[in-house]
Image 1 (tube, one colour):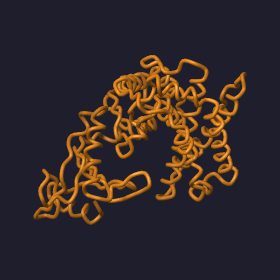
Image 2 (cartoon, helix red, strand yellow):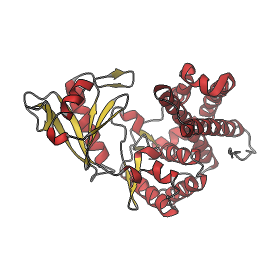
Image 3 (cartoon, one colour):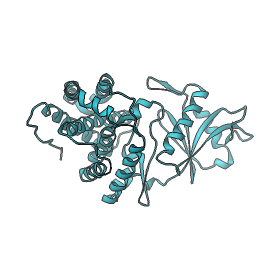
Image 4 (cartoon, one colour):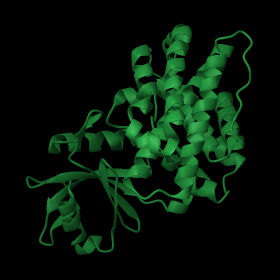
Length: 345
């Protein structure tokens, strides 16, 4: 889909008043009760939506994968077809020009990020999210995916591949800390690689969500909905459960709610015990450091595309502080007497 086609859709009287949202890979058309999500015809190193057939395939994958967690949110894949008014949604025809995922629209006020900003998230919400994630993980264990140390390191140090985007926000010293964190991760993976391989063999790798930050969680009338999982790269979803838990943990912590992050992690551990040894606790530090770097990178890239806000600047700085705190924990884990992590205040 391209902008011209989006404009043709909006000409249709049945879609009058729709609101358009754009990401770097998608278009979203928001109606009062529905959302239509369409993939841009783009190709990057990590995804390829460049052909109609590929966009259809990944729409179908998005529907199937997200129905595992949000069956009442993801409704159908529909075609985009020519009409008298321009373009419309409907069943596939020989004239179909593209495809969309149709979803039930949930009011933005139920997004976890918004609930957090209004301090409306409760301990009970964390328990429900943890329970849903734990049940989901137990149902989606994969045992044929060995731990790949090279891929893990490549993913960890990727945050350092964006110096032009990050240095204006972090300065040269902050950028240097990211590189130092990558060096510490390399040493950590050498020391703990066998435990990571053992966990992969023992059922702690799942075909999970892969992008579990607070913007991808609704708590609608107390009911958690985890949505928008990664559909374009299976490897990004097939991760250790501690990695998945660390993602949401860091996002909560960056918003000043370490109390909720701890409640979430503790409830998850109760529903799906997965942290059994001191090595496992060190792995959790590793994954929290990694996910803080991911969120730091994503936030910086977003700030460079759109006018930055005070909230985003605060978040970026918090992600950087958390990255450095957990990087220090990786360094300390090399000694027998490990010091506690000092969290930013």
